Image (cartoon, rainbow, N blue to C red; front, side):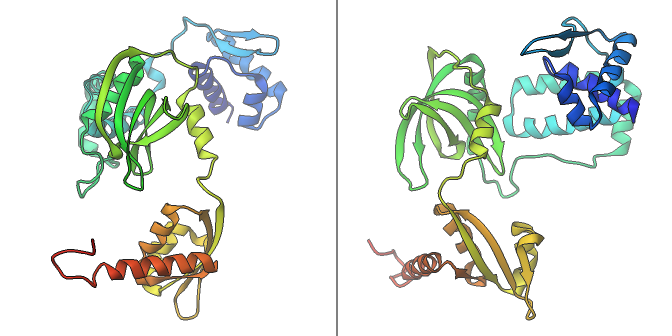
Length: 320
């Protein structure tokens, strides 16, 4: 356990600028005295650790120190390569391709043979089987480069209601969230940071104008938006037919599902009251019934009737 903790402390110091002793103690669930002894042990072993006092105090490894490839195992490199291959499959970026080549160069020849003989046990690929998703993969590369070079971009953005609007933004970066790519950017129209789903972006244009970084990181924006809801939360009580048991348990989790005597399923959950929630419920078709609240059930019924009305008109078209 001590060896693992010493290695963990070293890795944290290598990956972060400065870490205080309490952070180490909380992470490894040991006392501050133990951490101080560990840091002294690491320093004695030849890894130069510098301590700083004051409000922003803590410990860090000297700027010039680097750790060699021996600390990274064959399995570590194989996992890194799998992840990079998956990203490259989506980005088709020359820089990512060069990075793959560099990582492969760290694998010695005997390990390369071992990698080929062992075969792949994990595939990471953001591309969808049915061919959906992002229409223009070059958009990913262009936005990534614009974010890196801090160039202003503009595009026509279509919202969930199908309304298009011209936007001019300062791109921060791109992120894969769930099953879609998003652009994190400062929107000059809204005077605030926004996310833009790339499948709704059209007529992308990269400007020559450079913008000044406002000091906001992608990780900060991700945390900010991750803690926000897009509408007031609505407690739901849903009743599903038994044939949907596997799908329902996967979607809502075992803790939120209750199997009835007849095999049907009750689900208690809550979601923000927005278009996505109603679309999610309607995606289960006639196999779900909203028991609570009544206003959600009424809206689902009305939308169902509107869908049915689309098929009450001649086959050559729907109602104007």
